[in-house]
Image (tube, rainbow, N blue to C red; front, side, top):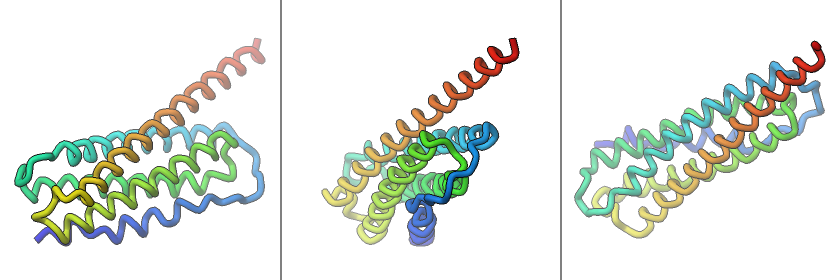
Length: 182
């Protein structure tokens, strides 16, 4: 009944493109590109937080039969949707990568790596759950969920760091602009 909701092919296909950082030649690093990357980091931060919330909910389901399969399927589907949304944003960051600062390039790489791990565990959990709807307390499924929860938390922390660093960079540029103007 929920196979169409839990189909994970899109999930895997979406993130394959973001794990291969481009190492194109250096282009000028512009404040506009830095600001654009910072906005995308903020969107990834929000999506990572939502993914963590869904993974936390799945991790909290401890009693067999509670919640219902429908609730589990909905949470898995929501987690998948967040991962897919992040994949699109990470692809946009990847296109900006060659014009981003070295620090932003490193953050893009860290985000992509964590997102790929989260995608893999999410896909594994979906596949297992889809094929074993009545055995969601199996240790294998619990491990997939625990690993997805862990990687969602790490992805959120990485995104938090990228957003905070972008804020500090922006403040530094602004104060630098004020010093040169006086």
